[in-house]
Image (cartoon, rainbow, N blue to C red):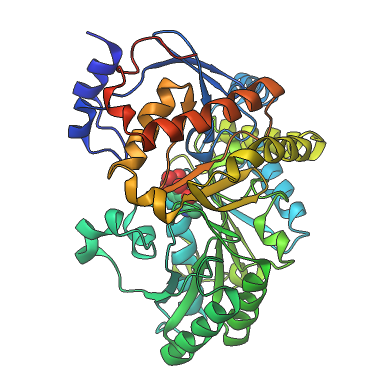
Length: 444
Ligand SMILES: Cc1ncc(COP(=O)(O)O)c(C=O)c1O
């Protein structure tokens, strides 16, 4: 039995309707190197989405691997309550330095969603400790995505992920998206202001994804919105929670997306790229104001949240390696410019509209005419044909995007610009239905 077949029997795959695997079986990957994935059956696939936006500098980066191997020989794991270790401290110090000391306290967890849970709990608990327990509501934005655990899902606006769990979710207030394709940032900021005025002193925090609402369809907004939300939340004593899980670690250019606006939130969540996509780690960075609200003689006023793997030394060491690569890296900006130039012609295709780009994220929507003739399962078809053409792609509904590793050589860029138009042509001409299964090693 093939590995793909065994996987379908034994593994419950994430974010997957398992029944659909009859038509779209999972592709078995044997190894990876740089931006390339090597399937079991031969050939290679360009990881244009950095394996769910985590592999920041590509797969098996020697600096990150060297750091983890070195750490493994010294200290594999220990709890972080009552004990500490160099990697957890050094990573916290390094991240704090990157915020100029504005966010000087790092709380560790393992996944993006758990960082969001922590930030929501911290924001509310800080209010409780300050004598405002009625501040228990959160404002989130249309098109937002913050993860799949119940707290994170309660502030996520993607119906297909929420619907089945709606009854389990805490009530939260939905504000308009600042999406540049919609009402834009100033109008969205004014609506947020009005919503907060109406909610009075019941709100603990506003949670948003700075600059790009990623899973909600790569909705871009400008830095003005972030500056306005910073003003609005600060003047009302409400915590601003920046979810930089997708857009942090240099994805949009600067290390933190908030740097585009020159603001710091009260709480900032990082994950995904922080270990270069090798080990699970997330971090919530906190301002002094939030942190100090927890200092007390009473144990229960402290933040008693924990996870077994909080601050795992191997993951933190990988994080330190990412900071050092980022600090010494001179190629990523040049890479982004070369990818942009190479994608220019693709962006002008009549089947596409709203071409947008920031840092190492490029996105396009199907034009209204193309959307009309696109197959209903456009995203699944693109994934399927993409693999046949040697590209790992995962469109969000009718939004096509690439978020490749920050380092791509000329060969990888050529491969991308050669294959991407072919994938689009094949899917829009519906020839994807007659295509052979990708498990045949026809992959380039
Ligand atoms: C902005 C944002 N927040 C939170 C999450 C959840 O992270 P995780 O999947 O690690 O739980 C994601 C995942 O894609 C994300 O894009």
